[in-house]
Length: 156
Image: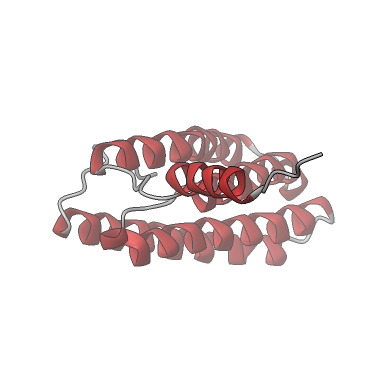
């Protein structure tokens, strides 16, 4: 019985994996679409959180909306982390992921504080929200310098 070498088959499979895994850098348009889609839930959740905050009669009323915000921000960070940005905006993309991770952590801390009725513990979320907005504004400018436009409503 003649044994066949697995070498050519292995090379063929390795080549297929290489072709699938490499050279798939996103176009500018595809990248902006994926980022815009990833961030859209944050826009909606942030608007809902603002509405809930205005209608809250106690700090405890903010616990559930802050938990939902934490979940949305975390999911967005994870989704963004999965996007392979074009090389020219890789650093900006990392900042975008980090911004969402930071606001998610702050929302989680605030949700815990709200559940305990700790108004002082919720206050750092306001500061984190301001820092988040400032970073998004800075990122928007930096992306525009690289000629990436996410549209007016894309960055929350």
